[in-house]
Amino acid sequence: MWQDNFDGDVSIKLYDGDKLIQDIFSRTASDGVYEWTPRISVTEGYLIRISSWKDRNIFGQLQF
Image (cartoon, rainbow, N blue to C red; front, side, top):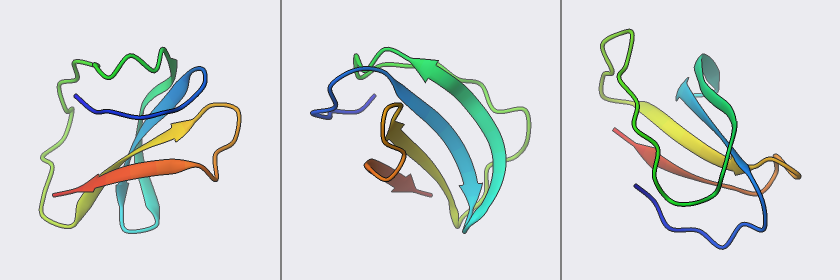
């Protein structure tokens, strides 16, 4: 779950630092909810980035 002020859809991705690990969802509604079951072990230092689908430079992230 998340809160944002994005106007439109978002993308959700899993990173290890700057390295993309998994494209969780390339485009989904910015409704603050997305249920996801990891295919790999998510470890400390990984982060989930939720970015505006229209402008990838606008994002928020959660670090594990």
